[in-house]
Length: 112
Image 1 (cartoon, rainbow, N blue to C red):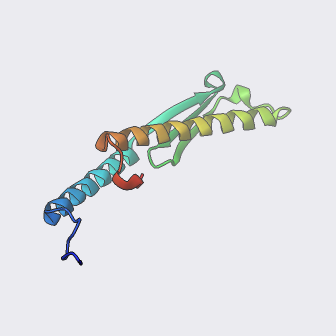
Image 2: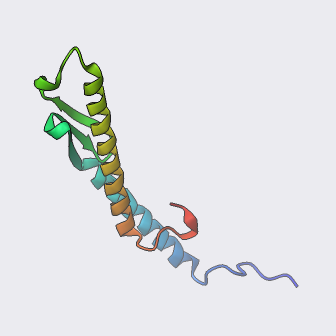
Image 3: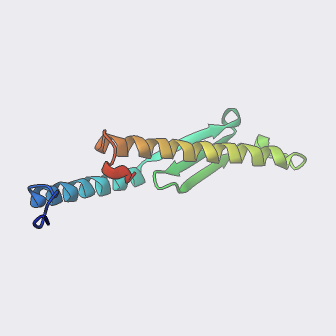
């Protein structure tokens, strides 16, 4: 026998839609707040300093002139790679922590 419309649907669809809209607004606000944050990361004992935003954009790179050796460009490249990767890792960690704070149980249905 066929069921009527809404069989298995939540009893109050309007309430569910309001909750989804509220959650979406909170996520947008959290993303905007993350975009404003900055993380500073160093490598090589402080000879390389990278500042990155919550949007994963490099804002600044400082290199101690003492580490610039034309005979050893590979070391500078390695230090930059290490610092950039660490900066990206920390931004990802900060982003996951912020989004996890909004949804402690995770997204329903495995959306995130």
